Image (cartoon, rainbow, N blue to C red; front, side, top):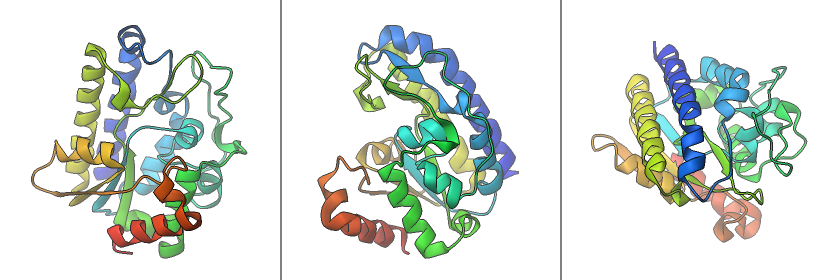
Length: 241
């Protein structure tokens, strides 16, 4: 039941954000391009849900929105090498967004470029649990917002930077999806990856624990300290690994 409801929630999120995209581009002066990986990378995302959303996880890791990893693979924090080699999600055709920024090519699951954030998260989980199935008995991962957005120069623009009425509509859609996932999976603890994700979750849930871990992005001095070892230690401590 849980997995099917998570799949339905993702379909609803995909369709609602697709419908809102043109309005976002008109309303939000910060962005000129929107990619929706739930749409063009739906097949690997669907496999991610079908294999891992119904295995009993009670801890939910929540990211802010896709970056290069999910933008190519459809998997949250989906560093392409980790998606292929650890999660064994392979063989799916990933389509293309309707409009492609010349600096933001989508290569799909075979993308040769790793994503540091996703590599740090998934390699830490792999080291502790051994298999993705074991991970999914304890931990599941979603993003609050499914859209990968950039300005004319191709720079990533995160949801917290958006202004305008459509930005409020986007937040409402994303909040509802997160509420649904927490409810149907029986989640007992939500951990925001970074302060923004924690803040979004904390505003929605009073009855369950909401915590945070520092974001593993290479843009974060803490995440890079000691070659990432300090971040890994903090991540494992917060997750009780």
